[in-house]
Image (cartoon, rainbow, N blue to C red; front, side):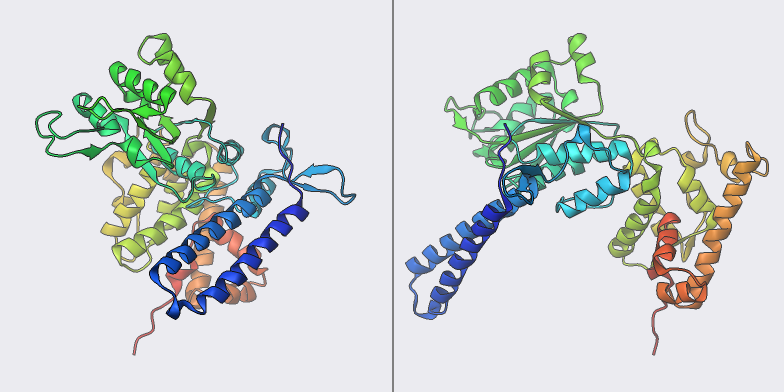
Length: 430
């Protein structure tokens, strides 16, 4: 049964924390006369107050409030399976609940489902299995689970299970003692010890060999590990989040993955849809990665030609978000002020099964007249906005005024086309 916490009690809790902070501030005024032992005590009190405040804020965000009559508890948010609000409202609700997410995401219902499941699972200790194609952002979602949970200030340790040689797997996960094998010149912590009190992320867990699966299962069942070359058990307290681009249940039926390990890892399952099913995110990601590339490559903001932008908006992205990011960084490296289609990698331009061909985007005879009208309209609209921004040095307010449009609507159009107003701001020269 869910525990309900009234907003009144939360406010009282925060008030108590504030009182303690004032007392601590008074003590700190005498810090110059305080010895090391007392300073250590004050620092400990600071840490305790921080943890107490975080706990109160977590309750405020994740539990429930009392309605107007003061008796009947009313949920702050609806369960995922009962939510009937629009995608935009669901996304806004995540923001209002102080949902921690590094990056950008759109209004895809499937992705919002994944985000809401991750949010609900985060404050628990339940294992989470994230499924999805390569490059969809599984590690990012694992960090979301970690950042929105009670272990957010503790270690997050990532392990690529597919990149560890089988003979080194046990040492990598559980550590080893000096002399345990050739090359073991000293004691070494494994990933599980490093993640103690925090979260361990087992990426590509489906690539583990069967013998490695047995040892992992034993560690998860007992919450104990043994370093290679030692018979001394070590207790570990770790939250487990795993990810895979393979069908583990089908693998277990074929005897390639232990069924008991599958059910232990998949208490909570989250599936991330591929980018081709989340096309509303492409303009957001274009702008996000363009800004990231500008910062990391220390260059001027890159512009995309209308036909390149049209291609990127319609490309199939077999490599998902990772492929889109790599394309943008390639463009930012090879192009000057404006990137165009020829700057794209050859394999992207070639027609492949399941990929939207270049001809479908740029040819003179698309599939339908409506396609022609939409493509021409989008290209003209984008060009119009770019010219308007160029004339006013990238000032969105001035564009809205000159075009007799609402500023919010202009920003919506810029986001739709992945246009960054910053790229039109000219650098002042002396």
